[in-house]
Image 1 (cartoon, protein in one colour):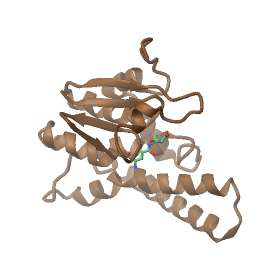
Image 2 (image 1 turned 90 degrees about the horizontal axis):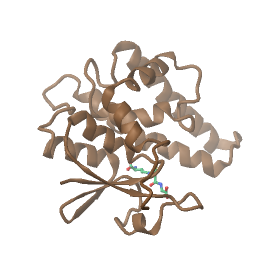
Image 3 (image 1 turned 45 degrees about the vertical axis):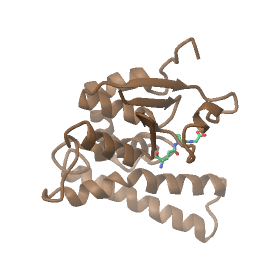
Length: 207
Ligand SMILES: N[C@@H](CCC(=O)N[C@@H](CS)C(=O)NCC(=O)O)C(=O)O
Protein backbone atom coordinates (compact mmCIF):
# COMPACT_ATOMS: atom_id res chain seq x y z
CA UNK A 1 0.00 0.00 0.00
CA UNK A 2 1.17 3.50 -0.75
CA UNK A 3 2.73 5.24 2.24
CA UNK A 4 2.48 9.00 2.66
CA UNK A 5 5.31 10.34 4.77
CA UNK A 6 3.58 13.27 6.40
CA UNK A 7 5.63 16.11 7.80
CA UNK A 8 3.57 17.99 10.38
CA UNK A 9 2.35 21.42 9.19
CA UNK A 10 3.51 21.03 5.62
CA UNK A 11 2.37 20.61 2.07
CA UNK A 12 2.23 16.85 2.49
CA UNK A 13 -1.39 17.32 3.61
CA UNK A 14 -2.02 17.85 -0.12
CA UNK A 15 -1.34 14.17 -0.82
CA UNK A 16 -3.69 13.05 1.94
CA UNK A 17 -6.31 15.29 0.34
CA UNK A 18 -5.65 13.72 -3.08
CA UNK A 19 -6.04 10.19 -1.69
CA UNK A 20 -9.28 11.18 0.05
CA UNK A 21 -10.61 12.72 -3.19
CA UNK A 22 -9.75 9.56 -5.11
CA UNK A 23 -11.00 7.26 -2.35
CA UNK A 24 -7.77 5.27 -2.44
CA UNK A 25 -6.26 3.37 0.51
CA UNK A 26 -3.02 4.66 2.02
CA UNK A 27 -0.92 4.45 5.11
CA UNK A 28 0.35 7.58 6.74
CA UNK A 29 3.60 7.86 8.65
CA UNK A 30 3.87 11.00 10.76
CA UNK A 31 7.14 12.89 11.14
CA UNK A 32 7.02 15.70 13.66
CA UNK A 33 9.02 18.88 13.11
CA UNK A 34 11.78 19.54 15.64
CA UNK A 35 11.70 22.33 18.22
CA UNK A 36 13.59 24.45 15.64
CA UNK A 37 10.67 24.02 13.22
CA UNK A 38 12.80 22.05 10.76
CA UNK A 39 12.05 18.58 9.46
CA UNK A 40 13.44 15.79 11.69
CA UNK A 41 16.37 13.54 10.63
CA UNK A 42 13.85 10.76 9.88
CA UNK A 43 12.39 12.91 7.10
CA UNK A 44 15.72 14.15 5.77
CA UNK A 45 16.77 10.50 5.41
CA UNK A 46 13.83 9.65 3.14
CA UNK A 47 14.95 11.41 -0.03
CA UNK A 48 18.00 13.42 -1.15
CA UNK A 49 15.79 16.44 -1.90
CA UNK A 50 14.72 16.64 1.77
CA UNK A 51 11.37 18.25 0.98
CA UNK A 52 7.87 17.29 2.01
CA UNK A 53 5.85 15.55 0.65
CA UNK A 54 7.48 12.19 0.05
CA UNK A 55 5.51 9.07 -0.81
CA UNK A 56 6.77 5.52 -0.68
CA UNK A 57 5.62 2.94 -3.20
CA UNK A 58 7.26 -0.38 -2.44
CA UNK A 59 10.97 0.33 -2.13
CA UNK A 60 10.81 3.59 -4.11
CA UNK A 61 10.55 7.09 -2.69
CA UNK A 62 9.02 9.88 -4.74
CA UNK A 63 9.27 13.57 -3.89
CA UNK A 64 7.83 16.77 -5.49
CA UNK A 65 4.11 17.33 -5.12
CA UNK A 66 3.29 17.73 -8.81
CA UNK A 67 5.14 14.52 -9.70
CA UNK A 68 3.49 12.66 -6.83
CA UNK A 69 0.03 13.90 -7.77
CA UNK A 70 0.40 12.86 -11.41
CA UNK A 71 1.93 9.52 -10.38
CA UNK A 72 -0.92 8.63 -8.06
CA UNK A 73 -3.68 9.82 -10.40
CA UNK A 74 -2.32 7.80 -13.31
CA UNK A 75 -0.94 4.75 -11.54
CA UNK A 76 -3.74 4.21 -9.01
CA UNK A 77 -6.55 6.62 -9.89
CA UNK A 78 -7.23 5.52 -13.47
CA UNK A 79 -6.39 9.05 -14.66
CA UNK A 80 -9.14 10.64 -12.57
CA UNK A 81 -8.58 14.31 -11.71
CA UNK A 82 -6.15 14.71 -14.62
CA UNK A 83 -6.72 16.32 -18.01
CA UNK A 84 -5.35 14.79 -21.19
CA UNK A 85 -3.84 16.38 -24.33
CA UNK A 86 -7.06 15.82 -26.27
CA UNK A 87 -9.14 17.93 -23.90
CA UNK A 88 -9.53 21.67 -24.35
CA UNK A 89 -8.65 22.29 -20.68
CA UNK A 90 -5.20 20.69 -21.08
CA UNK A 91 -3.51 24.05 -21.55
CA UNK A 92 -4.88 25.49 -18.30
CA UNK A 93 -4.42 22.23 -16.44
CA UNK A 94 -0.70 22.14 -17.17
CA UNK A 95 -0.27 25.80 -16.32
CA UNK A 96 -1.99 25.67 -12.94
CA UNK A 97 -0.28 22.45 -11.99
CA UNK A 98 2.94 24.52 -11.78
CA UNK A 99 1.59 27.45 -9.75
CA UNK A 100 2.85 26.06 -6.49
CA UNK A 101 6.48 25.95 -7.54
CA UNK A 102 6.31 29.39 -9.15
CA UNK A 103 4.89 30.99 -6.02
CA UNK A 104 7.30 29.13 -3.76
CA UNK A 105 10.16 30.70 -5.71
CA UNK A 106 8.73 34.13 -4.95
CA UNK A 107 8.17 33.23 -1.32
CA UNK A 108 11.77 32.21 -0.70
CA UNK A 109 13.09 35.27 -2.52
CA UNK A 110 10.88 37.49 -0.36
CA UNK A 111 12.21 35.76 2.75
CA UNK A 112 15.77 36.42 1.58
CA UNK A 113 14.90 40.08 0.95
CA UNK A 114 13.68 40.35 4.54
CA UNK A 115 10.62 42.45 3.64
CA UNK A 116 12.60 45.08 1.74
CA UNK A 117 10.66 46.64 -1.14
CA UNK A 118 13.75 48.37 -2.53
CA UNK A 119 15.77 47.34 -5.55
CA UNK A 120 15.33 45.55 -8.83
CA UNK A 121 14.84 42.11 -7.29
CA UNK A 122 12.00 43.29 -5.03
CA UNK A 123 10.33 44.99 -8.00
CA UNK A 124 10.68 41.86 -10.11
CA UNK A 125 9.21 39.68 -7.40
CA UNK A 126 6.25 42.02 -6.89
CA UNK A 127 5.56 42.18 -10.62
CA UNK A 128 5.57 38.38 -10.84
CA UNK A 129 3.34 37.97 -7.82
CA UNK A 130 0.87 40.51 -9.20
CA UNK A 131 0.85 38.61 -12.49
CA UNK A 132 0.08 35.26 -10.87
CA UNK A 133 -2.56 36.87 -8.68
CA UNK A 134 -4.22 38.58 -11.64
CA UNK A 135 -4.24 35.38 -13.66
CA UNK A 136 -5.75 33.32 -10.84
CA UNK A 137 -8.41 35.97 -10.29
CA UNK A 138 -9.29 36.00 -14.00
CA UNK A 139 -9.31 32.21 -14.30
CA UNK A 140 -11.64 31.88 -11.32
CA UNK A 141 -13.92 34.61 -12.65
CA UNK A 142 -14.31 32.58 -15.83
CA UNK A 143 -14.79 29.12 -14.33
CA UNK A 144 -15.32 27.47 -10.95
CA UNK A 145 -11.99 25.61 -10.96
CA UNK A 146 -8.51 26.49 -12.12
CA UNK A 147 -8.63 24.24 -15.18
CA UNK A 148 -12.25 24.87 -16.09
CA UNK A 149 -15.60 23.43 -15.12
CA UNK A 150 -14.26 20.35 -13.33
CA UNK A 151 -12.24 19.96 -10.15
CA UNK A 152 -8.81 18.54 -11.08
CA UNK A 153 -5.39 17.83 -9.65
CA UNK A 154 -4.46 21.41 -10.63
CA UNK A 155 -6.76 22.59 -7.82
CA UNK A 156 -5.05 20.23 -5.39
CA UNK A 157 -1.69 21.70 -6.44
CA UNK A 158 -2.79 25.33 -6.49
CA UNK A 159 -4.88 25.69 -3.36
CA UNK A 160 -1.97 25.86 -0.90
CA UNK A 161 -0.63 29.10 -2.34
CA UNK A 162 -4.04 30.62 -2.95
CA UNK A 163 -5.10 30.11 0.67
CA UNK A 164 -1.82 30.59 2.57
CA UNK A 165 -1.42 34.10 4.01
CA UNK A 166 2.30 33.80 3.31
CA UNK A 167 1.58 33.39 -0.43
CA UNK A 168 -1.43 34.98 -2.18
CA UNK A 169 -3.90 34.31 0.65
CA UNK A 170 -3.28 37.61 2.42
CA UNK A 171 -4.20 39.78 -0.57
CA UNK A 172 -7.54 41.55 -0.40
CA UNK A 173 -7.79 42.25 -4.13
CA UNK A 174 -8.77 38.69 -5.13
CA UNK A 175 -12.50 38.18 -4.42
CA UNK A 176 -12.87 35.27 -6.85
CA UNK A 177 -9.85 33.52 -5.36
CA UNK A 178 -11.26 34.01 -1.88
CA UNK A 179 -14.66 32.59 -2.86
CA UNK A 180 -12.92 29.63 -4.53
CA UNK A 181 -10.85 28.88 -1.41
CA UNK A 182 -14.01 28.94 0.71
CA UNK A 183 -15.79 26.67 -1.74
CA UNK A 184 -12.95 24.16 -1.88
CA UNK A 185 -12.71 24.09 1.92
CA UNK A 186 -16.22 22.62 2.01
CA UNK A 187 -15.36 19.58 -0.08
CA UNK A 188 -15.86 16.48 2.09
CA UNK A 189 -12.47 15.01 1.06
CA UNK A 190 -10.75 18.29 1.93
CA UNK A 191 -12.45 18.42 5.33
CA UNK A 192 -11.39 14.83 6.04
CA UNK A 193 -7.80 15.45 4.92
CA UNK A 194 -7.63 18.60 6.99
CA UNK A 195 -8.69 16.69 10.10
CA UNK A 196 -6.19 13.91 9.39
CA UNK A 197 -3.14 15.94 8.32
CA UNK A 198 -3.91 19.67 8.38
CA UNK A 199 -1.98 22.23 10.40
CA UNK A 200 -4.11 21.59 13.50
CA UNK A 201 -4.13 17.79 13.24
CA UNK A 202 -2.68 16.09 16.29
CA UNK A 203 0.15 13.58 15.67
CA UNK A 204 -0.10 10.16 17.32
CA UNK A 205 1.13 10.15 20.92
CA UNK A 206 3.71 7.51 19.99
CA UNK A 207 5.93 9.87 17.97
N1 LIG B 1 8.41 21.88 -4.78
C1 LIG B 1 8.25 21.09 -3.58
C2 LIG B 1 8.25 22.03 -2.40
C3 LIG B 1 8.07 21.32 -1.13
C4 LIG B 1 8.42 22.16 0.09
O1 LIG B 1 9.05 23.23 0.03
N2 LIG B 1 8.02 21.63 1.23
C5 LIG B 1 8.34 22.23 2.50
C6 LIG B 1 7.27 21.94 3.51
S1 LIG B 1 5.80 22.81 3.16
C7 LIG B 1 9.63 21.64 3.02
O2 LIG B 1 9.95 20.51 2.71
N3 LIG B 1 10.36 22.40 3.82
C8 LIG B 1 11.59 21.93 4.41
C9 LIG B 1 11.48 21.93 5.89
O3 LIG B 1 10.39 22.19 6.39
O4 LIG B 1 12.49 21.68 6.54
C10 LIG B 1 6.98 20.26 -3.65
O5 LIG B 1 5.97 20.75 -4.18
O6 LIG B 1 6.97 19.12 -3.20
